[in-house]
Each structure stands twice: as C-alpha cells, then as structure tokens.
Length: 332
Image: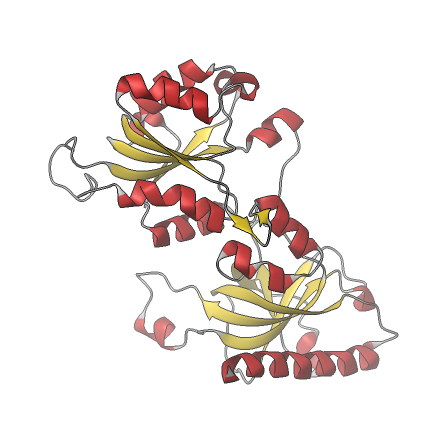
C-alpha cells in the first residue's frame, strides 16, 4: 500500500473514503467499501500516466486525530498506523493519505477543504463518508453541505448510513468501553474480528521460566489501546513479512493457544504495564519475532498474591481455564 502525508505525492485520480477510521470496525468498512468497489485498473499497477478510468482506492484520514489537536492530549489507538495499514490492505485499499491536522487545515472552510484537498490535492472521482461526518472549520461541514459542494464538480458522494448493532451504532468509543470492561465477547461483532495486540517479543525479567511458565514479553506500539488489566485466553500468530526466510516461515505460529497477562505485576513489584504471553506446549526462541495476539476471552482481573507460590498456583489455574476455553472453540 502507498502511504503518504503529502498531497503532492498522492497518486491520482482517486476514489476516496474520508474519515478517522480508528479501529477499522464494521461501520468503517461500510464507508470504505465504495472506494474499493468503484475502482477499475489502478494507476499504481498501470504503466505510464494514470488515466481518468483508473481511480486509486484511497483512504484519507487525519494525523493527529482532530480531537488531539484541539485538546493537546494524545489518544491511544485501537489501530496504530501499521495495524491500520494491514486492515485497509485486506479490504483492497491501495493508498493511505495521512493528512497532517494542523492550524492551517483546521482553519479551512468546508468549501476550501473541498477545493484544496479533494479537488486539487486528490483529484477525486468519488467521496464516501459516514452519515455523521463533519469537516471544515468549526465542524460546520456535513453530508448535505458536502453534496452541494461536490455535485457542481461532477464528483459522486456516497453517504453511508450508521451501522446499527443490537440497537446501537457501531463506534470506536463503544469498542473502547467494552475493552475497558473486559467484555471481549462484545467486541468481535463490532470489529468484525477479534481485538488483537501486536508487537515484537523482547527480553523481560524472565521470572516466568523460574516458576514453570515461560512467557513471551510483547513490546506494543507506544499508543496502542490497552484493554482491562488482567488475564486472557488468547491465540497467537506470527506476523511473517514477504521477505521472511523459509526457516522463519516454517517455525511461524498460527493461532497457537496461549494465556496472556496484561498488568503491573504487583506480586513482584513490577513497574509499568507489561504484556506477557505463555504459549501452551511450545519450545523455541521467539525473541525478535513479531506476534499478533488475539483476545478470545477475559478470565479474571489482575490481582496481587502473597508470594510466588500463590502466584504459580493461580497461573496454573488460569492456564487450565484458558485451555478449556480455547479447546471448546476448536470443538465447535
């Protein structure tokens, strides 16, 4: 996928899905789909200059999130950029434009945004937005206003209705609330997939191996949204890139059952949140590998124990519970 934050580097013409898209949940997928369905042969794959018949399926989003810009406070992300790229690529998106949200962009009126960004910068043939999308200075632009600005230019507008799920619309805020509550079962129907933590395996204090439960310590992206602290039944998959060696591919994990602890390790006076994954029936060196850990079920919140013996006993209980949980899924 082509990724740029410079409108001068965008491959045009484009079919644009416009929004923030943190999480790339099922509601977002409905907004993104028209950009994919309406394309023909992409100019990224074509030889020579792109033609009007070859629009590039393009997601346009903002970096940082507008709320960060106005509040001055960083937000944790359900899908940091590398994960967002993976999800968009799977949907068939060819180009991601991360518009720098700064004072100049914030001051653009809706008409200026359309002319400078959508027309001049992106040479778009169509735009897709959610029904609640607002843009321009003071969020004064909406779907009706955007239609009035685009129609005279012959640009198609797709306004996607909000996607209800169990009587409420799907939103990133709803997913965050479920994760904070440890309600993992509620997340998958909203995301369209399991929520996952992804990162590189790094060396920790190696305490787990001394009590019979060696763990892979995962270094997450700095702003990754962390669910409720506690213990989870999970499945682990290696993130193998295209240039990986044959040996790396052969040893890659694929939905391997495991138990994971997210927490501050209060029993051993830990500092900072750690993510530790114990893989069942696994022997091997995972250091340096990138792993994707899918959350299957929340088992219990984090707690402090009287000592290592009590901790070891509880980990054994957690592991047995996770095995039963994951085993019941395989049997279905």
